[in-house]
Image 1: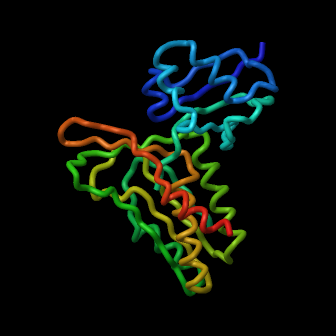
Image 2 (image 1 turned 120 degrees about the vertical axis):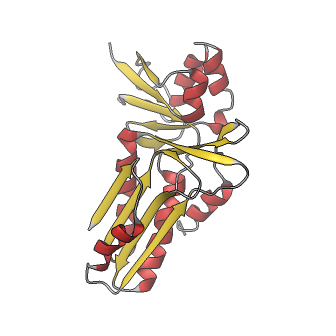
Length: 86
Length: 147
């Protein structure tokens, strides 16, 4: 069974209450947004973190991608707010 | 010379400038970002995505090197817990002429602020804390380089 490692950062991590988790890979055609939809049912923290999709950003295998991007063969997905470095 | 570092340790701009000055160019430019105090801010927490951060900064530095003739680039970004007036980021560039050094330095900090996986959390004297929101002005500053 293929798996996908998911990492959470900043307030996404705090709302969900964990740094990350490993889930069954939903398939190459599924998008980041599809995966977020399936995660929302996992609990109130997830629903809170993913309530406003416009405040979420993603990276697949360490490259920023739009939420509509298919997961493809990626092994690692990160979900986080817009970055605030510098 | 490319020098990229992400670390919890304090950074020393003087020590970081010196190697850039010895590359044989006539121009060195730098930017130092400082934690802004005021408003009861007591600490700033810097989180990042370790597996991605350095790789992303390398990409931004490569983009700068494709645009300007650079002899050296130094980027040092702190993570972890910082206090007001701590240095948070240093960008230094060396080139043969000032325009390339100054412009590439501005380019690098504009892109670092908006395109590398760092997140700031502010904590205040009265116990409040919140994650800093991304600012549209920062995106606009980055996008002026896209023309």
